[in-house]
Length: 104
Image (cartoon, rainbow, N blue to C red; front, side, top):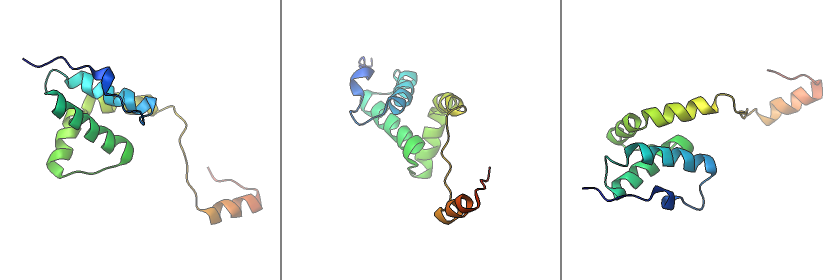
């Protein structure tokens, strides 16, 4: 029998609200499938991949991708209408400003 996990107590002080909600969703989805230590580790790996672009051995990446299918899809759907950053080279930005033209 698995022990009851107090997921709300696992939030890190450095996590943004968005990161916490995604990690919490992952843990809520899988809380009955893993022991607490493994669940915490898997959730952290997932958020490291999703938010920080971390990479792990192929077997780990496949496992996380499978476990995160629903949570990841929901998160990506929620991001569709959010403001997105666009990066341009400084030289291009300066040239556009000088010409008063802007690329889309």
